[in-house]
Image (tube, rainbow, N blue to C red):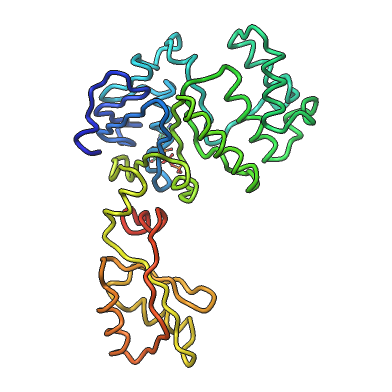
Length: 315
Ligand code: ATP
């Protein structure tokens, strides 16, 4: 985290300061500082086992930190009676609806837990919004993966939360539904809601997040707005088209033997190359010439967050 993020604890929806979490004395998170504002969508990205779910569970008050403090709406979310608990909704990585209840009754159960004044009105609205009205009387256990995910997403909104903690929310959804969820999250944030979004889908993160935090091995390694992170990236992406006498695979193999090449992927008629440093195309073409590899063209392409991940996190 940058030093200016060590804020001023007031007004943050979520604030983690110096948080560590160990399981059986083995650290899963170390000295994590993290904050989230109203109206903000924060992407939380890292390899498997990096500590993302552990962080989200700490924020949801399902785990207690070994060291440091977790505040959600300025209170400790840990005790079950914490007032923060009624103000957020949590979608775990492997969520489960109640399989032997209907879609409608799954929502009704949550509405009752949250003591809504007009549960039926709220549920009708959510059934329409999430396009599951036709499934209202189906048992949740009989739904397809995507239908279940829509039910679970609808359930998040039953009590009108101010903060969403989402672990892979678009997993299992078809492209149209994924787009619907992205628009829904943007709308939620525009209305002042805060979203912590853990996802392995970096296109999604780049498309909707205001800010991204990368975590690896329990430590935050970089943080910033997607566009700023890409500006700071030491690296360069190229599209290299082989000459007619060269094969894409041969060009790719030649490229992989060059130390400045981070990776080279054969595509349809060209090789996509990620270089470890910026401003390297001149070196690269002279090296290819030296090795007797002929190319038709080398074009520089815009890096995206997937490239950032490959170069900076690289696990
Ligand atoms: P993924 O992308 O695979 O979901 P993640 O970034 O969410 O990974 P976590 O689930 O937070 O990672 O796990 C971080 C580390 O903590 C891992 O080494 C994991 O094995 C360990 N861990 C998590 N929960 C427990 C637990 N209840 N008991 C013991 N170790 C745990």
